[in-house]
Figure 1 (spheres, rainbow, N blue to C red):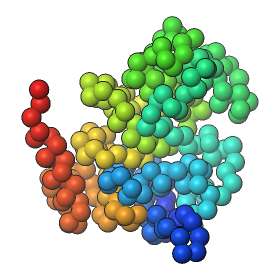
Figure 2: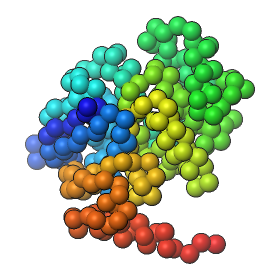
Figure 3: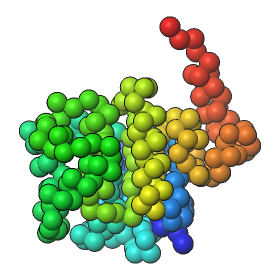
Figure 4: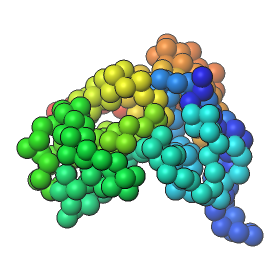
Length: 254
């Protein structure tokens, strides 16, 4: 079963002579329980695809489906219980004057869900934090702890799909692997489906089953992660990304 379907997605900004088309007939299909990566350089349109699915942009054309339901321009509450997004910068996604407890209870309040104390405690445990974190503010947390709270906030409504926008790029290298392992564990335990934007092919190899390579708003190639690791790619731009990733990995450290 396809959990995410993107069919002929187009999006432009501006009007008249100043119009700028940023997505061109994007087509994607993500199966239930799959982790699917969108890769490409900055400005390739990969985050824009997530924002269309998350309801942050409304003026797209094409057809979007999540869990078999068509995504409308104006999204209802059920969509947000099915789909949640985890952003790149956990500090920016958490209100600096709200405690962790307040941040996690807010979605429950909006959706009129009860047993809030129990749910907050449970979801904190699932992301590797205990109740001692409930009444801390974002500035009292490390970057990795903030991202764990952001993931907990996305999970508290028990969604089926997580949209992940570079979820580890703002973190120290030593913490990135912890968060990736947490995401892998949560997907396995909850049967979640992931659509993840990243520029890091190492992250794709670690977490994703399949991926699409985007360039200038277009999907130029879709392949399995095994094909990526084996350098079995066909498009010249995909080869450039792989070579750039290898050059970065080969840089001397220290």
